[in-house]
Length: 509
Ligand code: XMP
Image (cartoon, rainbow, N blue to C red; front, side):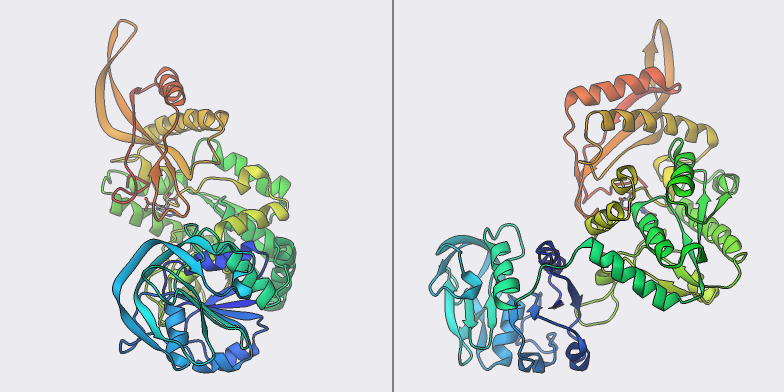
């Protein structure tokens, strides 16, 4: 395993991604991690990430300097390099010129990290500080025009450091450098696979849960479904899943999911048909935040009432993913942001005195998809686009009524059919329709119509933090519009949303 120390860089998740792509397991921990804990870990090497602080500032983040006495290889990146230099007796100064963006790297001494890397290549820099004096035992191994120490190494101790970011795609040979560090310097083996993960996760769940019972809120999304599959593998029918049908799902969704859960995955599952409760609660409410709050509250009430019927349950399972875990703590160890998800059931664990099981908490989304496939989940579910907890209610602008839900469901079904048919479903992060609270005039046959407008939203994204509107082919957009207007009663106009996130969000409400 490789330990990545998180000094707060926006790229630290990317370092973990790259390491895992090489088939090596790694975890990201804050610099407050005690040295005793590090000593207990079975480590092959340590990576010190970049970060926004300056090492000479008061309160800059620091990890116990005894990490350099463990006899392990260390790779410092950007701020991680500055920490290494400062700790081992060199000097870091504010650079005369801040370097940001592309730079041409010139290797002046090829070492293990640069093995099979050409002497000149493109790298990506983002720093305001530079090394002015190396610690004893180090050599400069690469420079750029503005940075005399772009890389340094003490090969005897296996300490390496880079002023640029090898983890970003802009650094052309970055992946090879990380590969060299992992395999040539640290001697890692390529043994991180979803098969191995599943095996150890099942064993861990067994040990943690023992003979107790576990409850899980199943949404039909890939995260909660894969969580359920793992736990079921570990404890069988001691897992009870609760599926709350809030009446705000896509067309036929609840029925299709029921078949998969029961017949294919053979999950022990309780369905709660709560559509009427949600619709009643939403009556005459148009404000988006109020809608969200009402849906959240009713969901909790329904879920809790059902959960209380399950005797002897001591655990609640959640499909929390690694980015949520990392984002919910700062580089300084304390929690900064609240984990967003609506699908985690808020205050329930405390109220019902439940302990948490979160078997996916070290995985990234694409790893969860791989794990799902490994566990036998069909590609329909593995590749499902994300769907928000409050469902179609936040895609009906204004009041949610059963009639408007019906219109949106039909529109959305046509849209998805065309998107799938054209081979775009997997390429898009999300594609959906929004029903607007506006009517416009149209003409159908010889008659005037005065009907609803729907907006189509299709975006590409890696993580939903940012998103771009999808440049769908005009012919596809034409087919979608024609079919919706011809096939769905009550709609006479289709518009396409061409806003990116930020400043717009993906969902309209
Ligand atoms: P926004 O609209 O904030 O959405 O750009 C980002 C991503 O989050 C999804 N989303 C939700 N997911 N519960 C969820 O489980 C919610 O309340 C919720 N609101 C938005 C949205 O679909 C997009 O993928």
